[in-house]
Image (cartoon, rainbow, N blue to C red):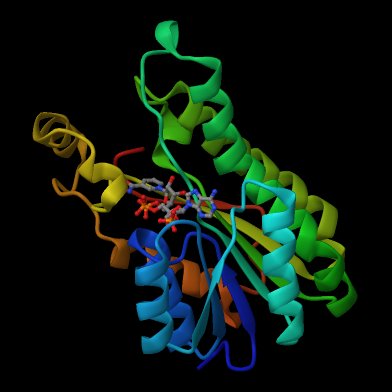
Length: 241
Ligand code: NAP
């Protein structure tokens, strides 16, 4: 129960990787604010199973981020922020619309910027805090058809390094996790042919599961990671090697 007494925000926490992170952080003793945008039934069900509260907010907007901050501050936090919300709008770059570029960058990188900016004044006052950004293997090696997504996830890695330098002296740690191909609704959109081709390239020869990612996030949020900041950890079955 290394996170006992802490208040954690997990954006996009109702399903997939976010849900697994919510379960790990709650298991470690944190009270988790389970942010959702459209998955209200899953969020409410999860909140009834763990030490958590479901909160609707669109984190691609500043008012949405302020809603989450207010809820966390009423509970005495936030102590932990996991920027997990993300979307894909895949397509080859030669045909990519402005809308596909802007919505993905706004949601994936913009939400992490807005949420982090919102929580920082409280964390700076506390002189402690942890931020974990969920990036992607696409940021590390690129991925045809994902110029918008890969760029947004690479922005998260650069933001992680920069923010770690800015707030380290206040004992706020900022790290990133870069998952590979993980079985969630996001990858369910891909054809079996694409997934089989991806699996062939993964040294461990399987797709990952959300539970492969969440323990690393728990570790990064806890006291055992107290000397780790500015880093990106690939959890991808070796795909990025
Ligand atoms: P997922 O099941 O589709 O989950 C995406 C989550 O993002 C949902 O909970 C969704 O909330 C939330 N979200 C999207 N837009 C939002 C917004 N404007 N405001 C609030 N929440 C929003 O996919 P996933 O695989 O678990 O993805 C989780 C994270 O892992 C994403 O950042 C993704 O890029 C990253 N990732 C995934 C993989 C993979 O292979 N699956 C690999 C690398 C990185 P609602 O459902 O409530 O709308």
